[in-house]
View 1 (tube, rainbow, N blue to C red):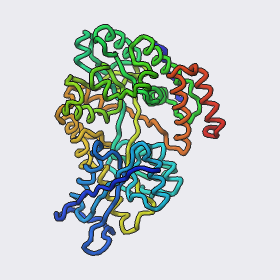
View 2 (tube, rainbow, N blue to C red; view 1 turned 180 degrees about the horizontal axis):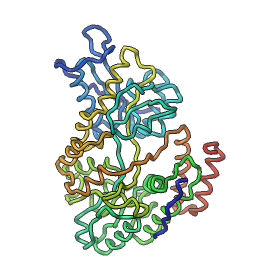
View 3 (tube, one colour; view 1 turned 60 degrees about the vertical axis):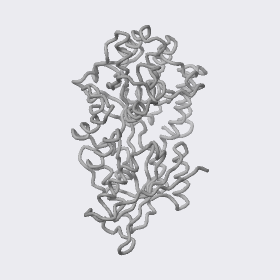
View 4 (cartoon, one colour; view 1 turned 120 degrees about the horizontal axis):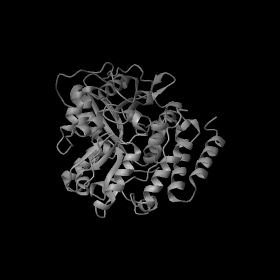
Length: 434
């Protein structure tokens, strides 16, 4: 097997408020305790980012206001890069939003330990919704998921056919993935067989999930074979080198969308982006699909099994300092965001909701430009999605150390074994692991 062995389970930014006006009439429900004054609507503020290119906030807000016409929703836009820093500052100053969108799971504990999130364990959620465990701390829930992306393999059918290489069939291990890349190399011109983006997730997310190792364990030897594979792929010309991709600030959208790479491991959020870019002419017109991400071994590969991948949910929490008169309206907002009704609306715009159902899957793949083959539907709907970031106050700091390991290895500045040892010693010396 190509290097892999089964592991033991051992502030300053522009902030714009956009008011999403609710319906003035209708027969929708009114949240109990929601009216600020008789005849006046309740106003809830929700944090968001990149509103022009991230339509989910407006979609959920519009759907909620149609159901609850006595509630107004205002979405406050934060800089996506500095989101958590700016939001933390606002919450500490008492000027934070009523609904606190949890952009990254690794910061949930930070908000909760700071007393900035309300316990929302009493919000009723639909059966089968994914990602709830990521928001549970000491038996209580501090947010609810509304979307749950998982990592899959995007592939360019046209390039595969041009090279005479068989399309992915859902049974691939990492051995098969790299073997297919080697076959593609001589048949797709200047394009690369694959593009692994520069994020640590692209290597470590799969290594952690498929080896059954948590970053909280403090032992990172299981990362070595995954990094060996990436370095070998770069050396063989199958993949753009990390240093080149970093220096040229390559984007995964550009590399795959303009057919510079035949395969791309990426989260399901890219489906909506790719559809939109092809429709707008920002990406080439070619046929593509998604397949399950390659597996560690055959035990989880194939459409008769459940492939293992990773991905964190995105969720909504409530500001612990919310005005008591608005608390029930805020909880109704959370319940709506997690509902099948909201899931259908999200699926219509190519967003992967946390709640999956046959209807949601049908809606998702009914979007014009989406792939229609059965393997794409299987990859989207069938998988064990393990969290990239376990819910802990130590996760963010540990991930910083592992990000440094990632850069050191792929930049060639540090040997894999030395980088792993340094990371293990660092998290131990910083008191992040026992």
